[in-house]
Amino acid sequence: MRDTDLYRHLLGLESPWTVAKVDLSVSTQRVDVAVEHPKGQKWPCPVCGDLLPVYDHSEERVWRHLDSCQFQTFLHARPPRVQCPKDGVHQVRLPWAEPKARFTLLFERLAIDVMQVTHIQAARQILRISWDVAWHILSRAVQRGLQRKEPRLIEHLGVDEKSIARGQRYFTLVCDLDLGTVEHIGDGRDKRSFETYLESLTDEQLAAITAIAMDMHEAYFQAALAKVPDAERKIVYDLYHITQHMTGAVDQVRRTEHKVLAEEGDNRLARTKYMRLYGQERVPRKYWASFYLLRKSDLRTAKAWALKENLRRLWRYKRLSAASSHWKSWYFWATHCRLDPVVKVAKMLKARLPQVFNYFIHRVTNALSEGINSKVEVIKNAARGFRNAERFKIMIWFRLGGLDLYPVTHGKS
Ligand SMILES: [Zn+2]
Image (cartoon, rainbow, N blue to C red; front, side, top):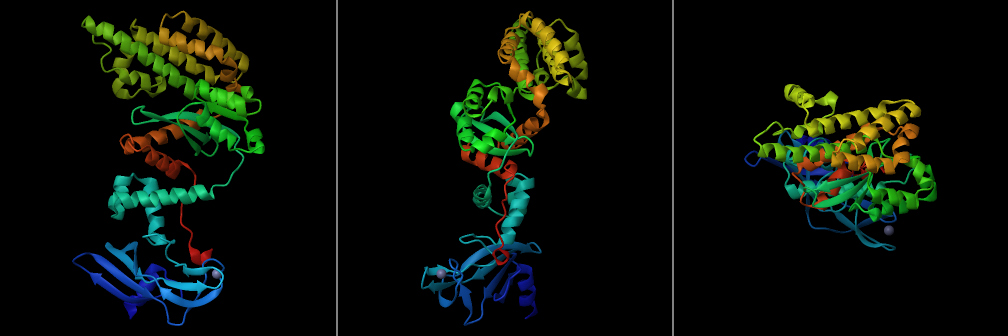
């Protein structure tokens, strides 16, 4: 009888449940534990809580539990049903699993913990579960979390577009920049994608927003303008998003120039795609030599890159007046450089200059915007482009939603 006692503890079984039988198979490396309850036991109706006698039992069901010493462990039971005069016939609550779950609560908790820190492929191997089971646990956890999500006041919002599968489809991500959590995932990247989120907020929530850091995307600007009081003063085009545009401009200049040079047999710009990725302080050591030569050259790419780096200095100023004079000299240089992609960005910034300078009032942190973006990229890369858009969304909620994902332990709630 001692092994049944041991398993009762291992399974965390609560009274009146006890272990009836333990089958251990060395060849299949599994343990099957049958649990039962005493005859004459009364059970609370899951709806009203009234104590009732057993009406009948459901078919035997099986739940995967935490492994015992590498042996996959399964719990077997026939759940009792009660007939309540008020609520009808119901299966009683089981202390080890959520209704309809195929796993015990402890297994689900472990699976959630593992999938939070590693990608699904690795989690599947650790937990010895199929792809479908992993997704089942994950999407249930997200569903649970979204249902429990309470509305709250958010001061600093971030809005970004995200592509899946190489720009085939876009999402709009709305983040709480202070907590670093994703608050909304809208389909597409048009005005409605952001507007639907703002429409879900109460007047109090809208008034609580003090700054919105966003990509320089006209649709988001218009959505904020339409829904957020005093939006012109709250929208911030920050270093992170503007740098993204400048980086794109540098890359366009580089590609065009490389084509022209390559036709003349000059391959100086071959394999310099990395240039667009790094700010001056972040160039990896292995590129130092070629980067130095490139910067010293008279190439148009070098000029575009220098313009990008010079613009980044704008955000280092503490005083608005100093930033403003830096802007003026940069703008003059940028609009006289004869690099079309750079001129385009310069004019775009000029058209929305108040929002660029709003940064000096709100100082929303770029680091967070950037941090959330890089985490989303990690999720995307781990799934090699996520052909299934819904799964990409679920994964973002799972990792970045700041949600309460765990199943509730019934005995304690
Ligand atoms: Zn009842």
